[in-house]
Image 1 (cartoon, helix red, strand yellow):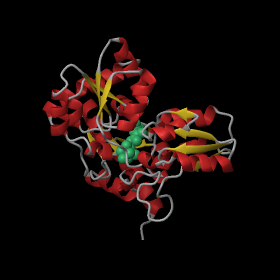
Image 2: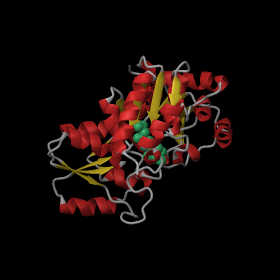
Image 3: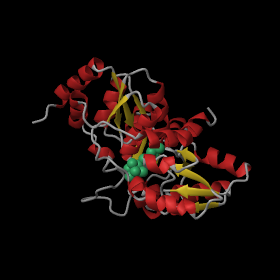
Image 4: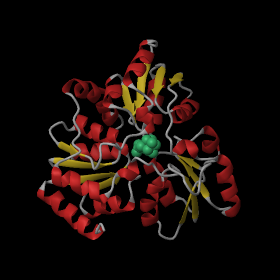
Length: 319
Ligand code: CIZ
Ligand code: SF4
């Protein structure tokens, strides 16, 4: 039997002993988010995770999220030790955009500015002109449109399509998707609205266009969290990973938060409103990585130096 309280105490001690800080994504399980909060770490989206990790004085960052987030931390802070509870936690967007194919694709369109989502490997970032996250993508692409740039966008086709519609940018899209967000269904959301007529619909733009169309607010995780605090509605239908409910409920304990339906909602659903890779971040694996200094992220110097350029461009944008 695993004693969670004991593991929690061990993690707290190890964080102190090793001068380490816990950087957790909104999509990790509540137990991980709670610990990040209790120990002076952060719960954030990938942009804020990158900023927090780079600015923090701790020598070791424990990144609870998926692999690209650990790689981003290492690229920004090569002098720090970057640990992850498991190196198995990846992302369907990262998997769906292998560097060789992507590089060949870029080579076919040498006149285009290459903009990649943060959910990519260090190698793909190294091939890019810009890295963006969902919270900054619209601003960056609007800026590129003002500069008269034509764009290659990778890997999320739904987020790319949303940005294209919003900005009118000339964009060629890679055909990747997030296995969690692509499952949300507009019909199910409208059925739920019939039950909760005053509900506001909050949608992450990694969802398909039909789902974005029924949204009251479209935004990144941090933008949806903000909307859930400031809007007057008492009920929210949320089309993003349910991990975000931890912070939404904490900020608004009297509001009701309902998971947006997916085609496979119910039994045997692997990725319905919860990322299976984020879910790999358990207390036990987190404890082990700190205790054994296992799950270390390494990025080669060559890749790191190249990937740093578009990443730093993002962090310097609109600072
Ligand atoms: O879906 C993801 O992995 C997101 C929203 C990452 C992020 O930017 O925080
Ligand atoms: Fe990737 Fe989707 Fe999981 Fe985010 S939620 S890490 S985009 S698979």
